[in-house]
Image (cartoon, rainbow, N blue to C red; front, side):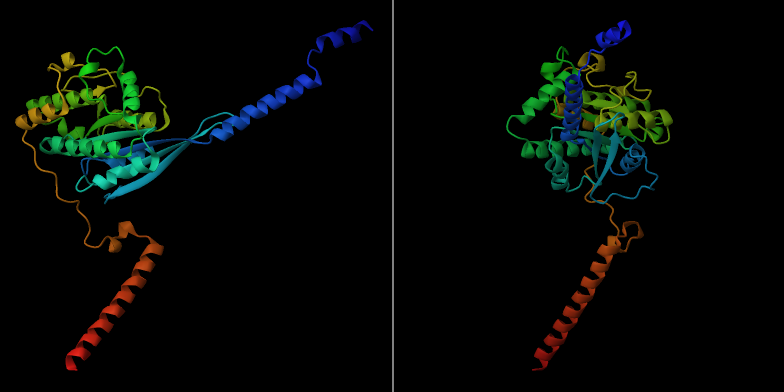
Length: 345
């Protein structure tokens, strides 16, 4: 009898308690499911032929052979966190092929997904310093125009405050900066070629990129697909922007122009760069004086007929195109015959 009494005392949970626990757990799971997948958007744009597609393929674990990006391409990555009822995380990835006549194309990712979870990677060709500022200026103008056009009232200022938090509210240069409303990482590509260039040229490029990254509230890294450590850094950076992991891809900062730059958000300053506070217009003018810039290329190199290019085959579209071509030829021939008949009349 004493054993029975002790068992009754140890039993603290009633059926009602257990039912409440089960309902609470079910509500938690439903709450997780109700939120649905989280989405972020990363827009990769910049110099032509700098390796944007290669970087994206590595980020998405694709073995595709990169082909020229003619206009604007979309792809996505997906990750599922571990654990029961874990959220699915989706990263929308957009790539702009050419900067020429691209203002409407630059609007597309922002118009499609909004600004709230938007970020951008600006890739510049370090091996062509005489085009560097031209390409960068074109990108910044396009992003500013698209942002102003599609932002909700008050959204830009609200997001700029988040950029200020990212670089540090106590940063001594904060009042002198031209902050962008969303995260930007400037990636200097083709470092394997650039590292062998004249030291003075590298100094000018380094000062320019550090200055513009600092005034925008951006991060800055150098990249080469032929360097495993730089490739890993660039991929970690995309993972950080696209999925939030790793939380800090920049393990250490590097400011020396004679080595690959790695400058996290908010790590630089005008004093460290060695220049007086400036803005993007003055930074561009100074750099263009030191290294004269070539104008933006008029157009991308496009095949004579992309529809006949083996790299751009789409069976269903090609069949429709062939059908329409036949219909057009029929109309042209019929028109030609009618015109000849009218002349004879």
